[in-house]
Amino acid sequence: MAFLEVTDLAKSYGARDVLSGVNFTMEEGEFVSIVGASASGKTTFLKIVSGLVPATRGQVTMGGAAVTDFSPQAAIVFQNYSLLPWLSALENVRLAVEAAFPQYSRTQQNEQSEKYLKMVGLGGAISKKPSQLSGGMRQRVAIARAFAVEPRVMFLDEPFGALDALTRATLQQELARMCSQAARPVTALMITNNVDEAILLSDRILALGRGPAASLSPAVPVNLAKPRAADLLMHDDQAIRIRNRLAEFLTAGAESRKSLSRAAASALSKTVPLEA
Amino acid sequence: MKKRLGNFALALVGVALVGALWAITSATIAPDLPSPLKTWEESKIYVMQPWEKRGEMDQGILRMASYSLWRVAKGFLLAILIGTPLGFILGASNLFYKMFDPTIQVLRPISPLAWLPLGLILFRQSEPAALFTIALCSMWPTVINTMQGVRAIPQDYHNVAKVLRLSPWRRLTKIWIPATLPFMFSGYRLSLGLAWLVIVAAEMLTGTPGVGGFLWQEYNSLIYSHILLCILTIGIVGFALDRLMGVAEARLRAA
Ligand SMILES: Nc1ncnc2c1ncn2[C@@H]1O[C@H](COP(=O)(O)OP(=O)(O)O)[C@@H](O)[C@H]1O
Ligand SMILES: [Mg+2]
Image 1: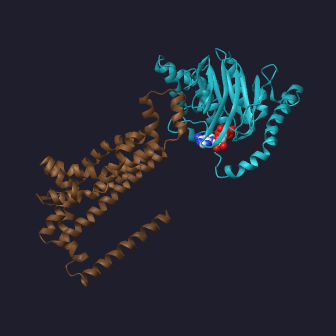
Image 2: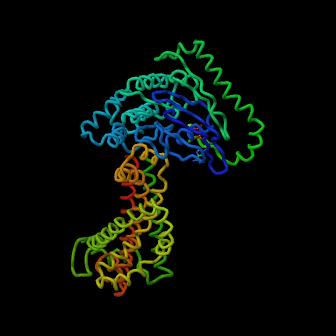
Image 3: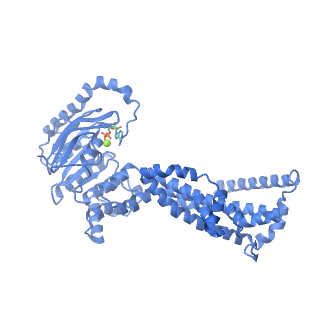
């Protein structure tokens, strides 16, 4: 049995089918990415797998046990950072550390929090409120908060989605480094809308088709040695093949659903799509 | 700066115009209404010696206002001490909301004039009856705003609490209270305004010293200019209180 197993998962919001017939497995220590267009149900999938949102049908198991709540061994980086605006960067991270390591002294909790803020390059801004930080810095705080609890499983929802290319590249390398540096193997499931980002970081990549009722493509393995360099991947044969393969999955979904989506268009036009 | 000065000048013009209207009204259609000048002449002693105490009901206007303010402060404190937790409970629990919302909607529009006799019966003394009335009448904006604030906490913050596995106490202090604070403060501001509105009624009926009590006594003694003095005082103090809360609210939002 795989470490993480998703069997015949479906999710509807009212009459709206977001996911349907989703199957997925993942081994411990793997880094897997899911790519997909916006509003295809990526966030929904991650929230169900992590236990934040219940599925309509199907089942999710982690380590053999059914997932009914967010696991104490997991951490998540939300798509919109979800930092608490009334707390400083340090306090945001420490809030997570305090709950994860209640046995630590106050000093140890502070050290742990500062260590991870330094690791993402935020040592100098730890007393700033999120509103005083740039988007990239907020994202770093969110990543530090997730890593500071030393999770076994890491869920990442478009962690670099809102960033400029340069910051994005820096943070991608930092994420790769943090995953490989961690004391024990980190199992990571990352959502992204950027295929190159997925190739850079993952062991396997799956594409989530277009909604409504989206499902996952077969996994595409990435057998490239880590650490990887983004500029080399641009011309690597295997990387190019993977990119084409995923592009096929992503557009095939769109082609076969064109007639269907036209029929559904009238129904869907009444619903305003949320970027959740 | 220049703009603010201009606005202040305009406000002064407004005051002068209303004063003129008052003077004309008292000179023409309402002979019982004391003119601004007469009001000033007869009230001077209360304003010029604002802290003087000549008798139980014959005291300087600031001293009177301070009695009322103190009473309002106690009633208001009582209102928010009860209203805030009540709002939290109603906002957090759908069960409680469904159970108590209709009752609250019925209690909310009841006038202080209706509560006060009940307070007098219950407490047999004017002071606690006044506090009871102020608290009961001014509590509702705090309850309702706090409740709405709790309901408006974004799902994202609830998810954060879940993911970080915060204890119920930390959930309250690190997420619920800070997220609700701006709503709570809008409620407090409205509540304080209501509490000040109620003070006159409470003091009138209980005959306790204060601006409201003084107003009622002077009405009974047919000294109408003092009624106007009290009205002006009530308005100015109420305005100052609201401004003060406004500043506190702005500070809070900026923080
Ligand atoms: N809480 C919700 N209630 C209703 N509809 C939702 C909710 N969350 C997401 N959706 C809908 O589900 C679809 C997929 O959303 P989401 O999972 O956020 O997509 P993605 O993350 O791929 O952009 C969207 O059309 C969105 O409008
Ligand atoms: Mg999303």
